[in-house]
Length: 78
Image (cartoon, rainbow, N blue to C red; front, side, top):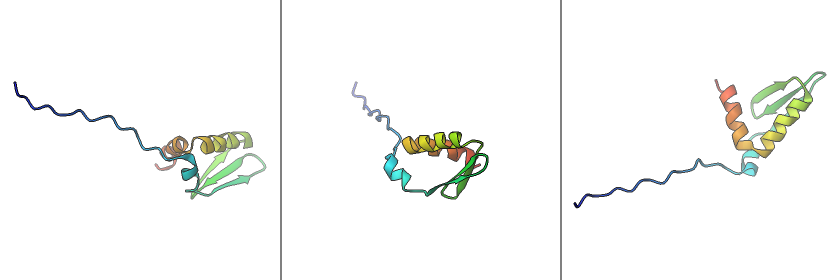
């Protein structure tokens, strides 16, 4: 019984850059309208019906940039 054993690779975690590194990648610009708001992130623009919902999304983006970028890329990069 001299069978050769192979090591099982360790599960690798997805690389997740720090928020402060990601936040510098794109310019964020807010355009307030009579009704709602448009948030411009880099070359993408996202319209919101209310300023409150836009600010909630911007706050989520600032606090959890990597995950929010993934979510919006799925929606915008179709």
